[in-house]
Length: 318
Figure 1 (cartoon, rainbow, N blue to C red):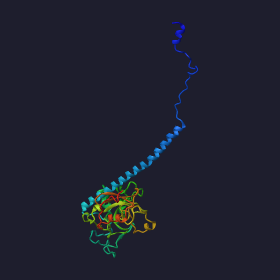
Figure 2 (cartoon, rainbow, N blue to C red):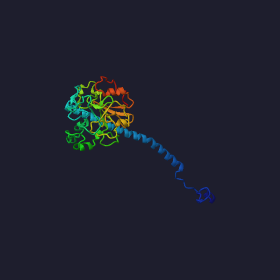
Figure 3 (tube, rainbow, N blue to C red):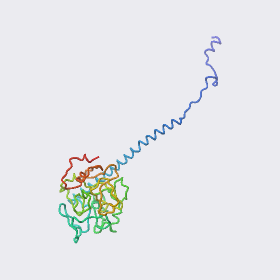
Figure 4 (cartoon, rainbow, N blue to C red):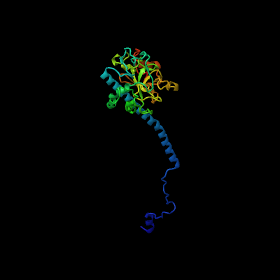
């Protein structure tokens, strides 16, 4: 092989800086447009996730609220098993309790008022021990129950510790009112009416109801429901509009200021859950009632003796 042939098989030894062999470094960063696109996508995802997270939190709160109602319903069932009747919604001084449908007696032995005229007003004067106090032994509050001074008004100094104690089972997680307010109320009447001994609900003044004697049946009659607290309420242990409500108002209806100034005004059910409020019937079934429910239908569910039994809860449940 001569020298010229050998040169043909030898690799070329061009310098790196020879024309056509210089390589520029590759660009590894991101452009401003790419950054903007990524940020825009993240913002959209965040905006979509916030309502979902908020809804999940509200569903959790509503579920916990329903569990509180179930606990109260079980407490009432346990109470009625021990005493053969439901507790009175509220009581006045020296009350003579009568079993429905017996005619109740006046609270005061020398009172001029008839049993029908006797009524509770939302003022811190009177006896006013209520169903919530009666339920304490059945919601793991035996010690607190034993410390109640049953000989004095619930507003007396001897019961101050009771009034200032917050009981979790009486509080809806969505309720941001004063901690000693109750989020639930017993239903005393099917119409807008003062709290009296002649009411037709399950929780009223100076009266006991035997579950087996409820004409409409406990499964068709509302026992408790959610309530919105009004300004100046007297707390969870007061047997006034603080823990008793009626079906004379639409659910979630906001009362006028002049109504709240009337101490005989009671009010209806309501909640901070969207679209309605949860209730529990006498048999322990929890139902969410829409705020658009037909008012007469709602009232029939509170009246223990209107002889109207619902065929289905589907018409009232969300």
